[in-house]
Image (tube, rainbow, N blue to C red):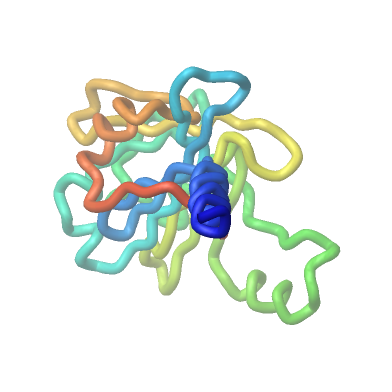
Length: 179
């Protein structure tokens, strides 16, 4: 009896440690937690992997991003290396990265800044990463609804995340965030 009660308690404790919320919709993954004493989960990291089918989805392709305060909110489907380079600098790998990683990263056509990491392959949008609470600082990347009516700065509430990207195909708790 004690062994069963102990095992059940251990399972409950370990399950309650899953404090990271994971929101998935197609090729989009968002992670959130209760940041800074918030009463609700705030989604601070969003990763979208693109293939031609993902960009063709009217909902996803028309989601807006505002790369800097002075930039217009642009649909994801309209991003190109030239438009992104007008607002964000090329990605420079950190000096502490292994040489193999640096060489691979330098071969990519990637840009970063203000909480954005945007990568192209052959001139085609390959991925977009947004993060408000990553690395050493804080950023407030801005996303907008496909209709262009509303914009939100990260971190996002679940209601805002759904307003921009739609209902998730899967939601769950995770032990950790893997980038």
